[in-house]
Length: 161
Image (cartoon, rainbow, N blue to C red; front, side, top):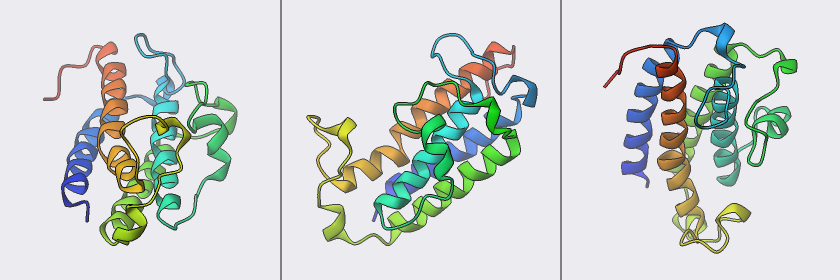
């Protein structure tokens, strides 16, 4: 299951590694123009969404304290009060998506055909848990990767690809 989505997520994660490498620690909580997010929030948000995807597939959330500052509906800034470093946020993101890819690869097709339970997707063409997992692995990650890339480019860095 999810062979295409897993391949896309791995491709995006490789691009993310190049992008995040150029973001200095001291800029993590700086608000960048255009999207209204800090790099810390983008990293924390992607990490917690990867964990939420795992939970949807029977796993657990490794960082429940991150739901409020980084979860769906949060302010887009993240919380400097948490004392998180770039390394901690990046490791959580890597682990979150590795776990999600593993769970997705072995997910029960009958479970995936059931409703997603995501209020944000109500009234959209996304009806099943499988749809929600596909979005988390692909377009959601890609959208926030683009935001992180714009932070990087705002620092004067050249295009990566």
